Length: 247
Image (spheres, rainbow, N blue to C red):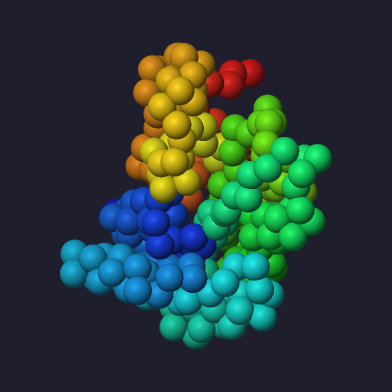
């Protein structure tokens, strides 16, 4: 229970990596505010956490809409009183070759994956500054580090998250607030479930550990960065990619 007494807010918490992060943080003792569009799924996860003796509440929010973000954070702060840990995980894909990519698909991915992280950080940081303690963790991607054909919008949004992480780390480090990123590789989620078998096998050939990652692999890294054990780590990108990208 190393996060006992802490309050975490996780975006994109209804499935995949976000769900795993919420469950992991709750198991470590944190109260958890669950934020995503699908309220039904969020309520199921909150019910699971609460039934196991934890504390969780669901807040429906479209992370591409600024006013909805402000309302969700206002409600979460009213209920929990503070936010100690922010996990900016919400993300979507709209894949297409850049020469054919529609502006709407570019904007949708940038707004959900990158702009929402900036807006959520703005909403949470006041609480962290007040108590002089905070953990901001942005979920980026190996493709924000190495690029990916057909994902110019997604790769750009995830690369932007890395820059945002480092900028925030420099801004708030003196207040005992850390800001780090976790960069997953190929993870078994709904987002990767549609991969063809050829692409899946090709990916596995480039992963020294010989398997796709799990959401729990990523959640363990997030829980570490949220803990006191990571107090002297900031502005860092923690790779969780099975060795797919090194260096």
